[in-house]
Image 1 (cartoon, rainbow, N blue to C red):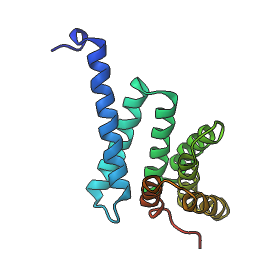
Image 2: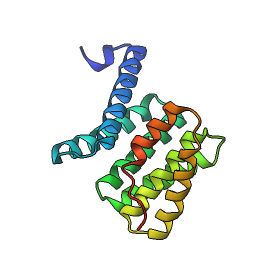
Image 3: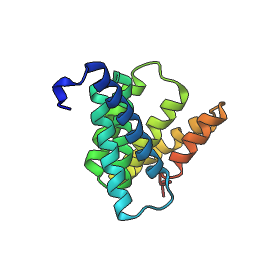
Length: 158
């Protein structure tokens, strides 16, 4: 079936499905204690695919969260410059609005991870401490478990 014969709402439905699936796959890989080189590559591709699909069907919030995921994935892979750019972009979005506590905790954790990749120890220590405190204060146990799964991959300042 040619692209121009697909109803726009059907295309949007599938694009949203791919955004969610790619997003979830990238986060699952990012939370893994160990990954193979192939899984690192899959994680990177999944994160970028999620960001692409959210750019087509998501809200500004979906796009900011996809950018946060990109910051985290790039940091995990040691890509300091892009990790910092993505992490700062998502951090600025999250902290410029009335965001839920779990999202603010994530923004600090991802910025700490990007700073670690960039070897900016001062920035890493600042945002790591804030993320740790905010994460520990999360009252909802499911939110805390999700945060902790990501925070475990953020290196503690030395």
